[in-house]
Length: 102
Image 1 (cartoon, helix red, strand yellow):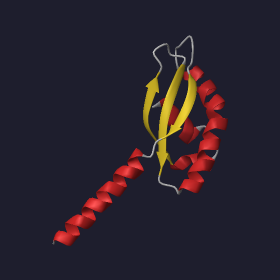
Image 2 (cartoon, rainbow, N blue to C red):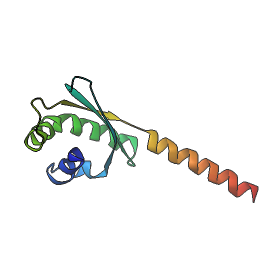
Image 3 (tube, helix red, strand yellow):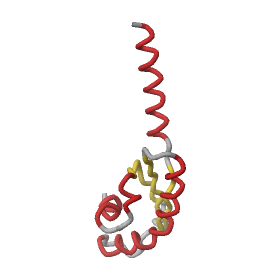
């Protein structure tokens, strides 16, 4: 994925090394893309990452423009996604139940 590559190689902020892109939704008219991201970092650090992503979105969009053959490059909107973290909590609870049964 292009956005992931830009985050890893082109954005120099080390706080963004801990994020994972879970999915991308492109608006029907291509005007914006909602990018769902998550991280294993504590919530306090997640708030800081959200700010960094918002600040870097223009830079990321300009880099995408150079890599995509599109007339209009979508505006990027980063959305925090806790589904991976919540899924891990559910799996952990199920593991605990399994241990109690044994």
